[in-house]
Image (cartoon, rainbow, N blue to C red):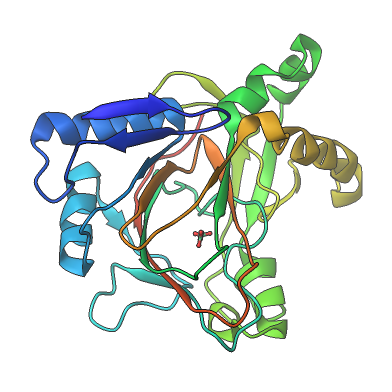
Length: 272
Ligand code: SIN
């Protein structure tokens, strides 16, 4: 198995078949996710059963409350945009599940159908974003916690409900959670910036208006091109990302074509 670090964010892994990997290879993939934030593999054969089997080898599966499920496998969320739809899923920078008290460790996304061009996913490196901050701002952020919520994304009045991805809106189980703004990653021991452009509402004890200028600064800082890798999918490609160490954004530049991805989310832990 070869692990090749990529500029900006992530690592490319090859010479491994995830359906036949031994325990040492699974442990190495898991550690590479912690260390690089996201790993990419091409040419894998992760049909639904094999996808679930691989996911279970890296950690317990947590079922997303909001995404449509594949017909036969509730563990697998369908990330789909049809030929007719104009709104995609995950089209703004975010990391998954920060509204949960124990945010998901990782997400394993498998490309089932890809458009002829476009539909890439961008990943941003939150270790690098943290490390590039000044010592003064690192110290200030180290004293702060932020409030995250699912309500405005998956609740009754969400943007998804206003568009043509209505299945993701109108939900009522809409948790709010508080996490440190700078976390120590439980798998790598490194510090990472943990705010989320899609789900963070404000700093704890601050109003949304007071929080906005600093959050906007952090959002612009963390998506600097030098922290970002753009991944192009083919059917069979896999991205396994760490939600504590990266953000991602799905490009919506392939109208009139279908893109279907299968996503399994791996359980995480409280962050500190
Ligand atoms: C997601 O945000 O989980 C989906 C990413 C993608 O479809 O590329």
